[in-house]
Amino acid sequence: MNEKFESIKLAGSIAAGALDEITHIIKPGIKTSEIDDLCYQYINDHKAFSAPLYYRGYPRSCCTSANHVVCHGIPSEKVLIEGDIINVDVTAIKNGWHGDTSRMFTVGECSVKAKKLVKVTYEAMMKAINIIKPDINLGNIGHVIQKTVEAEGFSVVRDFCGHGIGKKFHESPNVLHYGEQNSGQKLKSGMIFTVEPMINFGNFETKTLKDGWTAVTKDKTLSAQFEHTVGVTQEGYEIFTLSKKGLDFPPNL
Image 1 (cartoon, rainbow, N blue to C red):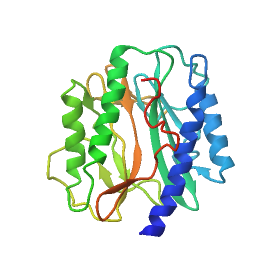
Image 2 (cartoon, rainbow, N blue to C red):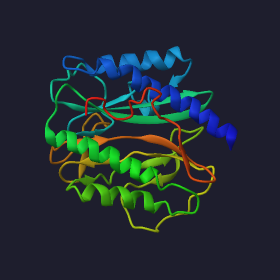
Image 3 (cartoon, one colour):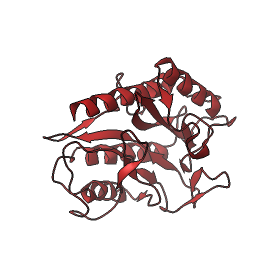
Image 4 (tube, rainbow, N blue to C red):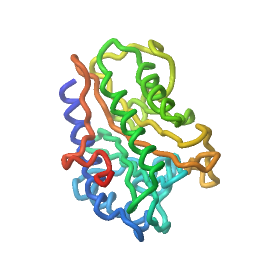
């Protein structure tokens, strides 16, 4: 278990480092393709590979999902403007192991409602991670997230979920971000998976655009997401994708 954990921690640290690296460039006027270029360069400089690149035909090294885009937004010549919020999702492969993480960023000064959505999404993820330990039910993770965000009037996306991760990008189990307390399989020491809630300001329904990747809110309201790769230890959990610079949450919020 120690070797597996250390291997994923190394991959996770590279993915987290890429997000640290782009933090200073996310401002009005930046193109999402420039964010992608910097992520690619950082991962390559650390002798790792970008998992999304060419995965099932995906054309870029990271996902950039702004405003009402829920996930899998493709970097492009789109220019970010003041008030945007954007999720950047990065997965690095190092020595055959995957580390997967994403963060929200605010572009300049954003609205009060956008700030609240981002804060609640991060809070829900961390509350769920904090209950992880052997012998709890997997469904408890989703229950905590759903309870947290619905209490604030937001909704949990049902169409996408967290996942096991290791030598493969996506493995079992599926980690739902909603559900009933004490449902699902029991967690065991050594399990590794992502917790990555996608939270909408309005309704939870999504649709995928014609490019086959970009998922958006059906009602065009804002969406936010954070993600960590987490391992179950004998006593609790370990997060493999923490920022070494303390940038896990937007520094200007």
